[in-house]
Image (cartoon, rainbow over all chains, first blue to last red; front, side, top):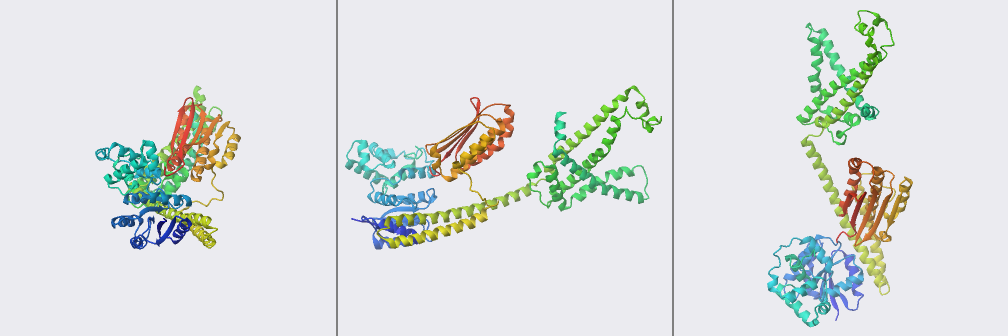
Length: 219
Length: 410
């Protein structure tokens, strides 16, 4: 099964570069391109991609708005990876909060771009956990002291442990080894965590955990 | 006494004297005019000379109200008196407050000037006479009606030379003190008024905001172009064999993006640049060898240890670090003299560490009052790079430690 990718960027040369890198892989294929956030919904409806590579700055509708619209659209939305020029761009965190599953820098090496796409689609581990923690530390450093207090009621101790390991970027298999349980059990725990937090995926759960102070990004 | 000698040998003192004498010259027209008027008027009386002396005081204030005088006085003060006013902006006086300040200053300048000018003319010959007093027998001293006759022919005539010397010292002291007092007072009378300061700051802030905006836009556009270049080059090298057509297009795209970015850089940096373009690149830590050589040539025994990992430090950090080391070594030479200096540059935990240390010698006060400037410069660089620094005496040596992060994000 090939992973279907939709490219959204107002710069044709960026799309062309990404398409060349992605299409050269047997398990990946670019199924469509859009030059503005406003075209994303139509393109998704037309091409049913597994993942959208979304530029942040676009002339009419930016990547953050486009992400929100896509996720509000109902159905099963594709995974969304925000693609950006600068790491300490304030928009990156906004996009993650809006529901993007990860982010990639345009200067990332081609093999890492490909790896990032596969990681996000597979959903088995967090993309760039340290970068997300740094962003959270910058944007949500003063999360309330009571923040996440009620989480302890909602999550079992085991689930909380799993969430902390997810935030560190561990995959299900790694978590299983660390907690001496089967990968299947981990999967169930992760599923429960996402359900209880009403998070769409690991990235969203981790962002929430940082935002509420359940996990301190500075730690 | 020693301080007076030092002040007298200082060029500043004599530039200030020139400023004062200039004031005396400027007062002369007032006096001449009043004397002519007094001579023509039918009024007579012993109070006429008093009027001739006193009337120029308000008259000079009135002339000083002319807006342009402030600029003229400001320039003269900056050039000849120096002091804090030299760093201030002194525009043409617009507000009443600025004009009044200038008027008062102008009159003060002229009148202090005339005292100093007159004293400078009269005291030296008078002192010369006194100093030669016991030796000379000029005609008028032989005249019994002369006020000096009794002295000349008394046992106290040896007091002449010391009295003459005292006059000279008094004159020099007066010149030094008058110059200093005026220099100290100048900012109060001629310095920018609060309103002018606000306007000046606003202009500066607007200019900075504009430069900031240009820099940010440049950052965006160059970042964008470099993204295109990186991505296209990465893609081209990956598909070179499968898709040579794409690779060829990619090369063209790379060339054009890079060229456009360079043109943008050229244009915006031209707008941002205040000083003349450098013809030599800024030195980085890679050029440290030359600095070490120069320092050793200056007579400093330098014990230096530099990590090889320093070569991998980002260029922006490397450039600033070089300047920090340079300023640190200069400080050591300036304040401690030719003492052994230890320099350590290491890379650890994503940070660059610089240590400059030298044994503590000499009086601590010298270290304190002069140390500000060089350290301030270093502190500024460290702050811009979001690093940390400590500097001060520690365990018998003066030690400066600087730590700079190597990545802006982390």
